[in-house]
Image (cartoon, rainbow, N blue to C red):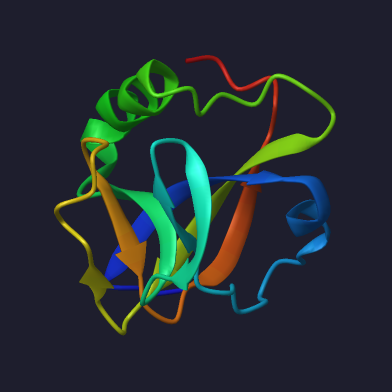
Length: 112
């Protein structure tokens, strides 16, 4: 699998049923922790610019509350060749992946 843009994303609830290889739906916009009806141009995630920076990305995710801590959540790897959008998102490394595909599920016992 060769993708120009790779990232990490938390999946919760019904979204957890998405299978590897599936295309992901665009994410909703949020304002003041309130989900809006408007959709983003892509699927929100934390972009990994290089594998040696993955620990920085995981740290940023944890600081913003993205940490799988229940049976209702999982951390996944997403990818696209269609580009990204939304570099003005509030979380460091966050962006919207246009045409994102689910590539892998990160095991919960991964040492960080």
